[in-house]
Image (tube, rainbow, N blue to C red; front, side, top):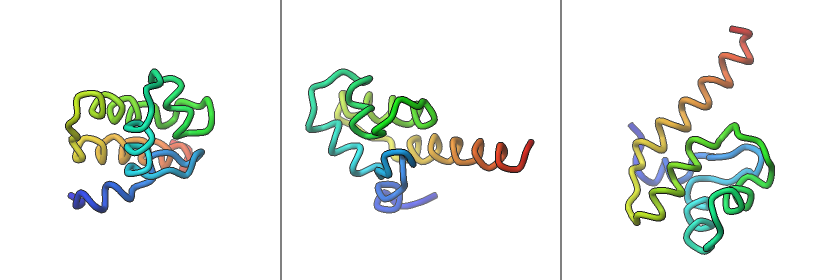
Length: 88
């Protein structure tokens, strides 16, 4: 398992090139609903990083973060991308 600092540096969205810490900062500084706040992070309409972002947005709303869960969701997305690249 990674440290909290390592997780905060993990890229949460390739499109927007934002890491977890930047996404948290964006979510904390906006009162927009998820769909519009997500667009600030991703800078696109794709749904590839949606699971991690929804969870992070919800955690922000409740004021507590489970960084292990965020890491797990990011790792799942990266694994799906690897499998697709390999043609499985």
